Image (cartoon, rainbow, N blue to C red; front, top):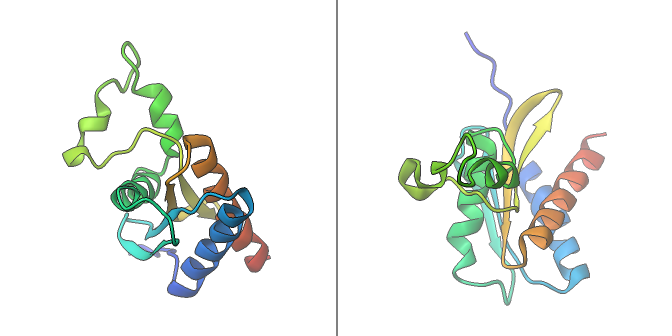
Length: 141
């Protein structure tokens, strides 16, 4: 029998609030998605001004980070021509994201979910996602 650790809705809200605060601080309205450890959507917010096209991208970044248990920017480097995972971005119906902004959420060594952020540059998206994780870890401390 397995014991599974996963995010609940209150933790998802903390992740979104931390990400939203950072997005407001840097002046870039974002789409923010939270998934459980299996990549299933738990919560989503599109800030006023967040790009409509970023909705699906944020969800798929979170899906990739939680289900594959790897940050999306790590797939970016590994999926370039000549690299070991070249072409992986077309896997699973194109849902696997290879640009920054998706991070796994870990607690006590387990991936308990993911956060995906989109509407800025990949570096901005990743910074906002990390701020969400930082807010959750502070709340859990």
